[in-house]
Picture (cartoon, rainbow, N blue to C red):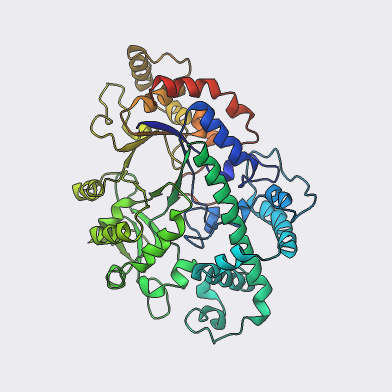
Length: 482
């Protein structure tokens, strides 16, 4: 069944406390989706933000970031009294200041919390305790990467007798409480969404950062030297866009080791997410077929080689262990045919981006496959309005002529692009919230290849402007017969 949806990060939702969280705005957005006939909400990763506040360099693939805790939910549960608003009308997230503000109230709520059976059962999970220890040690070591910690902390994961944790118990308990509260709140959001017949689409990068619980607690699963530093790293080779390629720096998996251990790392990584989302997009899907292997000593991505990955063995194992896992394959770019064969073997939906595929001459890239998600753009693209603005005049004229000829009659060209995406044969059409609002490039949330501000900082200051688009989106969805 063809359906429509919206792409917006939780962090970009309005809030009284400077960043979107699992509170009221989540529920209001779901109400908006239901009111406009949309059935999907796609988010960005919820994991603990790493370098540059990027959700794609997290400290854990399973844990969530404390920033998403709703202080209003804590008040409802009687764990907090009054909390003043903070940067309530901000149009950008100040991560450092917001984190500092919210943390003091999370600590207060923890002190008022009385552990119950659900909490104790939650804490029995291996990843929960290990992540709590990881973050406690990270704070004790001035937030440095675990490779730079004092040896007694760095080696605890291999030899738990190397240090007594008695004096750190309160800090560890706080971290476990944070993860418990985050999961409790998000599951309430998911239950509400599903009740409204809205599905939640999560997002997961294929690789993990070196500074993560994933690597610290699973060192044998990665290509590391005897000092735990990466010997080979991830990236992509030189192409039309970059003469030196992209050197991402993520440690590569030791696929031979993973195969020998029944892909346990991947099974547990995905098991921790399967009950949080209805579908899960995995970034850089092509690396399950072949991945670019770069020597860590190489300063660029030039000196790499393509290596085949055991994609079929992995997904056979995942399907057996996690039958409720629904994967979306990020299959963008110039890929070899084997990637599509792998994708189609498991019937994974792929992705198409209007900004990459629209041809005003009338040639369509959307005719061949229904099992896809069509986007006007993603978190890595400019807004559709910003993208259109920088095109050449003759191309703009051809585009306007195309829309007029094919009955697209919106006054604003970006609204025609939204209708065009909705009208495709793709099973899903996902529209970034910035495109629904008709924002210029000021609404862009990330520019690949750059780090730090203003990436990931954009946010709505209220839901009012989005509700003003209710009639447009509702009619556009209905017109597309979704």
